[in-house]
Image (cartoon, rainbow, N blue to C red; front, side, top):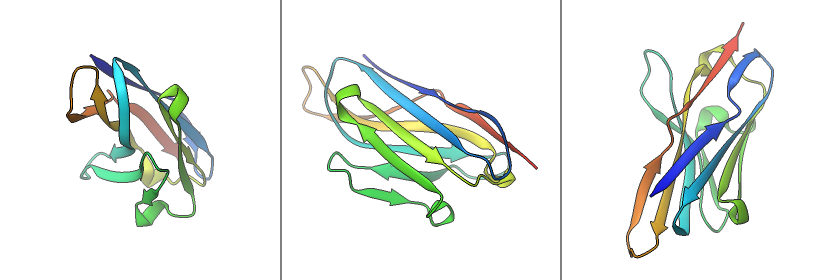
Length: 121
C-alpha cells in the first residue's frame, strides 16, 4: 500500500511564495516520475511541473521562471517552490507519483488527496 501526502498549502497574498511538499510512504521499491497538478474552479486540471528519477524537469508555460520542482529520493519526497503567485493560480494542488512497489514489476500512478492553495489579491 502506498500513500502520498501533500503539505504546505495555505493562504498567501499575490506576489508571495509558497513551498509544497509531497511525501510517499509504503512498500516502495522505486519511484519514476513525480509531479504536481492543479485544478482551479471553472478550469481543467493541468500539469504544473514534473520531474523524472534522473532529475529532468518539465513545466507548464505559465509557471516557467517562477516555479521550481525538486525531489529528495532518500525521503521519497517531491517539492514545488512557487514564487510570484497570482490570484488565478488559486487551486487544489495534487501530487502524482509513478511507483513500483514490493512484489510488483508494474509502475502504478498514485495520487495524493490534494492541498488547497489560495492566492488573495
